[in-house]
Image 1 (cartoon, rainbow, N blue to C red):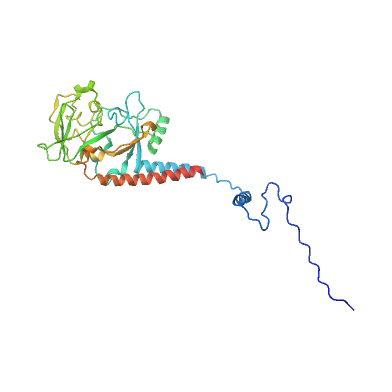
Image 2: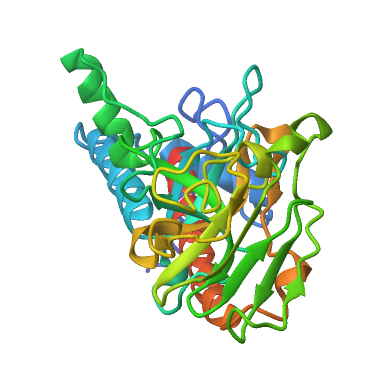
Length: 325
């Protein structure tokens, strides 16, 4: 007669793994009931994740993308320019023996509006305006190729005559100056009344006072600009070209040729808005207050400026983020 059934003995549980049983170098798995810290979990996941090698084409693709972005920015948004002469001293440095400034030019600034009085503009020199140094291509083909690439991405100035001056009067305005260097503007034709500009930015050393001469009045044709350098006595600007081929220092340029002395709006490349290099000279280039009452449509030019900055900053951040990766 069999006795009462005995309960079947439970199978023994395998012992929990100890740190000695884990693979060498692997972080220990969390023990049941213990909370895994965030740092321990991050280390464990990093150890478990297999290293993936970047494809061979990733670096060339990033380089091509960076070059493409630079070309797009240079072509449509912002382009750097080098100041090669002292005609805009001391607003822009380009004197002999000093480090020429590099400025950034806002190219879309005049897409929906024309330049305003007081703007510093970069433009292609009209025919006959060849009195300042020009950039010429080198004869060496290798150097020429490297230079062409630099121009493509905007780090080398373009070949030919590219000048930078300040807009003093626009189409429809009448401008004249006296022998003391004062510049006067009228919006009612040659008979006036005239308003004398207050120009603290003008650089006219006393040793060059003999070069101060009277000019005008001249009425600027529609679609053209009267421009002058801030270094008034050493700038081949509109006053210098008051008469076709007329040398600086003429006794009185009363009969200015309104076409020979002005610049077509269509030749303007863009508006200079900041000194980008050297770092010690970094500053923005605004419009002097003396032009406030004569500026027309200044807000129209400010909108593209904000848009161009809004475009450049994200592109710069994308490139920076990719470099960090």
